[in-house]
Length: 189
Image (tube, one colour):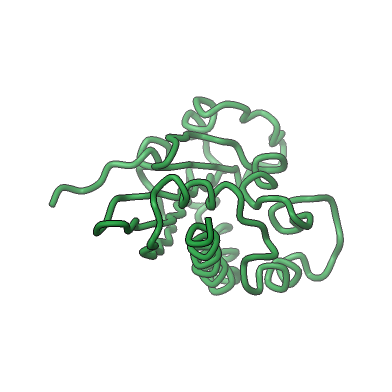
């Protein structure tokens, strides 16, 4: 079976850090896609607890780590620190963000998918995540989420590696619970 080419491949083809999870859902692709775009933080088990811990209990503005009530998580991400990189209705959505920068760099500089792809100067680490829907057995879809992080030099890789070691268990749990929340919502549509 040939490897599935995703839009994520276009934005982060090379990476040093990675996570991948999938689930099968008894729902049509349209419902799964709608659920990806509409699931809220409150539907994801322990999301608020784990992101509160990640923020060290500090309050702050709305962000992926401090999602407002009743607002879809993807929407919160795109309104705050993430950029929509690619979207193919009922198939895939890809979002990305800059996670490590040189101290003199302004985060607001990456405003387009092309600028995200072009970010290859030393001192950066970029992260991209997708949700991919594939046909499975009759009436079933396979939904996966993959996160890839690419550091542009050894210093950024080391800095992100320390962070990744600390947050990976919570990140993995959130991703898995996010998929389960999407599945519940899609089956209920």
